[in-house]
Every structure is written in structure tokens, then in C-alpha cells.
Length: 603
Image (cartoon, rainbow, N blue to C red; front, side):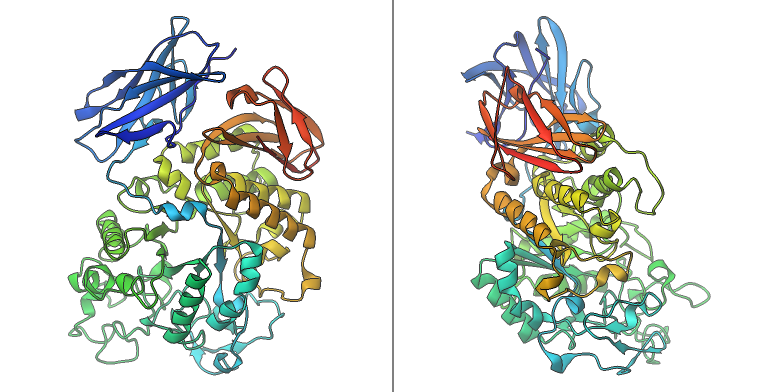
């Protein structure tokens, strides 16, 4: 038998008792383990805590030891060393190696971190409000109603396609009342939490250039409309997070006041001049040099007070009654800082976290990152990131053969396994569970379009979304097969005519949503890679005596043999999709998997 050990910081293998932190490690009973240690680095020096065999369960021998905490640092890193037949092996988040693993892939424990653990059981649904449903015709933008970036805004018919040349000028009429009216649809789908793109006063359709942080945009409704939506959500046991755009404002915001001679832009004497960063030539620093989005300067104490420190700061107000939202998603959170750049970014992001948790100890802090976000995800800043780096982009590359810039890539199952593990292994376990997994969003092409309308691969991607470690989020319309290339095409209106829906895809979503909502292993379980060769990748989610196996096959019909002895002494597994039963033979499971499809097996 191969050398094998398993540990995940789940309640059965990692727990606090009488002031001590106890850690358990599982080995197959047939493995000749003679010694085991937990290695930590308190006070920057290595320390080995001896482990002892604690019990045997079925085919497992359980070893237990006490974790020596690193009191000099917020994070205690640990790995396991053990001897099998007198030969050393190591276990870290990177797996089993015959040598000492790198420190940055050790397991991580952050005693001070309190997770927003409610998110682990949620099914999120992202809504771009202007494109979801028009519930109030009276608040719609009228054709030519006002100028935006020097051009008249355009009122579009609901099912018209967005025009790339007109971008932010186009409005379709979706609003908060429309979301209220479609809550029954969302409940029937299985959604339990909403993430809304910005809803505060702004001249654009995307609302990422804020004019007033304290009022809902009048074309979306009123503060009272939001209050009613929040009440309806709570009545139906649903949650809500909103988009915080505090890296920059609109050039029309009163602080900047582009048209007012007394505003920061035109007057060096303006009280809010220091809210922004002006250069010697009187130009100002703006988001990606877009003139309508001047960047806030967090070196200014009044900006800090207004955004997060003050009693009535922006980030605090909406967390309180009568709204009591459940958290914030922070736009381009990695970029904000002082004097037009990201100087002291971590200081202010930590301040955001403190403000949120003072208002609600379980408030979810979600950051937008297109690339690696490890340093924001160590327990002192964000609870989770929009997981493009650690989930979305590797899966898209594996299935489509192209990266996010449409360049060809050669990613096989081993690469996918490595890319997912690379991101996962550097995060504390509660934050792995809190990562915000998505297949698409308002910033990238729709998943169906990215996969060239390959409906088999589309269903495979959906399977991964609901079974991989982290919190699943559906981008509105993906569940019925909505298409769309890059922005603004990915922001098409929801097709409310059911004849336009892909019913097979919708049924696939519903089946997996039901499983995700009823499975503790998928919500809080550990992760174990089982097979990664060529076109086929298989993994398991494990919690106590529950195991759920997922097999992803992007290629031709095939059979794979999985070493399920690593999961426990199971006799059979049942397929989620066709309810067939597969028998375990000599600790292995032979799984047939169709062309371009996925299999989910329940223990």
C-alpha cells in the first residue's frame, strides 16, 4: 500500500479543549507507522510535538498531538513528520512528500480569526441590477434623459443586445423592485444569498462611479425599496451583500464636484481637495486613467473617517437596521491606498475589517481579485476573494484551451490539480471554505460562451462549482444558458420567457444545488485529490464519515479506477445523476464517465 496520511482542520481532526489545540492524523491501519510529530515554528525556531496513536476506527489508525502555538505571530504554521517502516515522510497542504515541505504550503492556524461561517452553507446569486428584471416602469431611464461622458443615455428594449460602442450609456430598466418580484424564482432555484453589483447613486448603468454613497440610485428605487427588499430576504431566510466601491468616486461626487468652482477639482482651497491626489499639472489620479473615476486618497484622515472609521461611515451604515446587510464585496480592493496608489493598503483593508466586525461579528468581507490574493487572505483582512485565481480561470483553461485573454494554453488534469492546490494550500482552512467560487461575472465572458457553447463541458463546469471547496455563486442567467462575450455582452438581460431556457441545464443546477445545501461534506469538508491524468480529474470532499467524489472528464468516454481506500472502508457509492450503485473492490472503485461529462458519487 502507498504511504498515505490525511488531515484537514475539520472538527473531527482539529479541535480546542481545556485551552489546548489538539490535532489528529489518519493513517490506514495496515501502514506500519512507528512515530509521528507535529512540526511548528514558535518564536521562529522549529519545534516537534510528539504524537501518539489515539484510537482505531474501521480501517484507520488515528494519531493525536498537541499543537504548540506561535505566540509571536498571528499565524501558526504546522506540518506532520512520520516514520513508516523506519523511513520518514511529511504531510502538508501540498500533500505527502519524502522531504520537508516548503513553509508556505504548511497547514495554517489563525487563533484570532473568526470566520463568517454562515457563508459556507450558502448558494449565492450575483445580480447586475439593470439587467435582471424591470419591476417598476416609472423609474426607468428615459431615452436621452441626461448626458454621460458627453453623450445622451439610451433606453433599450429588454431583449435587445448590448452594443459595445455604447457601453455604459445603455439602460434596460432593471431595479430593486424587480429583484423583489423575482424572489420566488430565486427560492425555487435554491438560492439563499444575493450579491448585487453597485446600487448607489451613479450616472452609469454599472454604478461603479458613485455620486452618493447614502442613497440608492433613483433608477433602481429608493432607500425604502432597499429596506423592503432586505425585509423580504430576511423573512425568507436569505442573505444580502452589496458592492462597496470606495477606491474611487464619480467625478460628479460632491467631494470632487467637477462642475462646481468650489469643488476639489476646480478649487485648491476646497475642504475636500485632499480627498484626491492632484499632480503638478493639475491633473488628478483616476482609476485606470478614466477621468470619470478619480481615486480617493486614504492618507486623508477625513476620507478614513467617512469611509470606515466614523460612527456613520459608509461601510457601517448599511450594516445596521433597517437594512442590516450581511457583508460587502470590495471592488478593486488591492488597489486602494494613499496618494493615488496602494501605499498602506493592508492598513486600510484591516480597518475595513474592523469596522465591519464591530457592526456585525459575522459580516462577510469579500475582495475582488483577478490574480493571487494570498496576502489578503490570512485572517486579518478578507474572509474570501472572488476566486478567479484559485478556481475560475484554471477550470476555464482546462475546459476551453484558452486563457482569459483568449490565448491558447495546454492545461491537462495534472495542471488543473496543481493550479487549484497551489492557491488552496496557502490559505487557512476556514478561508478556503469561504472563497467565493464563480464560473463567470459581469467582468468576464459568460461561461457558456467561454466554452464555445459546448453544453457537455458547461454541465461539467457547473458540477465543479458546487462540489469544489468554497462558496458557489451563480451569475444571473447562467442557470438557463444565457450567452455573452466580454463586457458589455456578458451583461445581457435575463430572458424571462421560459421557452428560451435550457431546461436540462437548469435541472442540472437544481440537482447540484439540492446536494450542496444538504451535504455537510460539501459545505465544510476537507479536500483530497484522487486522480489527475490527461482529461480526467477526480477529487473527494470529506467530513467525518461522509465522502463525496467528483469526477470531471473533458475527453472521450472512459473508465477510471479510484483509490477510495483513502476515504475509508466504503462498500458502495451511489451516482447522483443516474442513481446507479458502484461496488468497491479491494479498496478501489472503477468509475465509467461519459464523454465531456462529470460524475458525482455519494458514500
